[in-house]
Image (cartoon, rainbow, N blue to C red; front, side, top):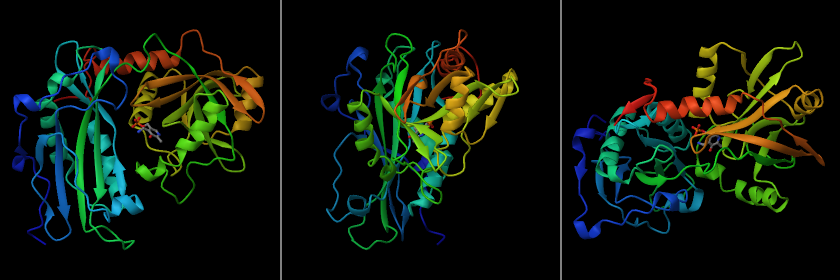
Length: 366
Ligand code: PMP
C-alpha cells in the first residue's frame, strides 16, 4: 500500500488554453447562477489499486464516461460549494476552504468514495483560481463560485463501493444574490414532505439529497411561495430552508433575546455560513445564542405573542436571506423585520470579511 498515490500539489500538471480556446466573459449583470464556467477545470482520477493520479488543470471539456459508470446508476456523487472574492484591495480570497474540504471528506467517507489530503487539494484549487483569476468579477457584490465534485466512475453495475472515481473542480462567476437590497422570501412549511431523517444522510452534501427536493420546491412555487421550509417529525421541527440553514431571532419566555438554530444531529447540513454566524454572535455577546430543536408550535406561539424578531436562512449563495412569511397548516405567519436587523448586520460583517474590508483569519489569500 506504500505506493498508493496521494493528491499532491507539487505533482500538478497544467495544460493552459491556447488563445483560441478562451471564452468570452459574460457581463456581470448577466451572471445567472451556475450558467457560466471559466476556461479551465481541475481533475484528479482515482483507482482503488493505484490511488490518486496526478492532478491536472486543463481547458474545460466534456467528460467521457462509460454508460455503466456507477454515478449514473446509483448516484455515487458528492459536491461542495464555496466562493472566492476579489477584495477592495485587489487581493483574491477564499472563505474558510478548510471547512468545505472537511465536509467534503466527511461526505466522501459516507459515500464510499476515496478521501484525500485537504491541504493539498486546497492548493490545487487555489492554483486553478489563479489561472482563471480574470473570471472573478471586479465587483464587491459578485464572486467566483467553486464546485468541487466527486463521482464513482467504474463501469460495473454492482451496488458496491466504486473502484474508480473522478474528482473535478469547476468555477463559475456569480453575480449578486440580491440585486436591489434584501428581498425577503415566503416559505411553504408542509409536514408531509421530509428532506432528511435520523440515520439518513441529511448532514452530507451528496447529490442524491437534492434531486428529490426539486419537485417539492416546484409545489411551493405553484402555491405562490419561493422556498420550502423543511420540517421533521411529529412535532414539526424546523430543520432547513431550501438549501440554507435556518435562524430564528426571538424573545424567549424569560424576555431575553435569543438566536436559535437547529442542532447538528444529522438532519441538517453543517453549513459554513451557519458556523460563522454562530461564532460571530457568540463573540458579540449581545444576546443568547442556542443550538437547539425548535418546533412550529413554538414559532406559532412566539409569533402570536409578538416575540419573533426575525427569521432568516444562511448559506454561501446569499450569506443571509430574510424570510417574510411561512405558510403552515392553512395559516400565513407574517414574519417581522426588526428595526436594527440582525440579518443585515450579519450580511455586512460577512461581506466586510469576504471583500477584505475587515481583516479576518477566515478569509485566506489565494
Ligand atoms: N443546507 C443545505 C441543504 C445546503 O445545500 C447548503 C449549501 N451548502 C447549506 C445548508 C448552507 O451551507 P453553507 O453555509 O456551507 O453554504
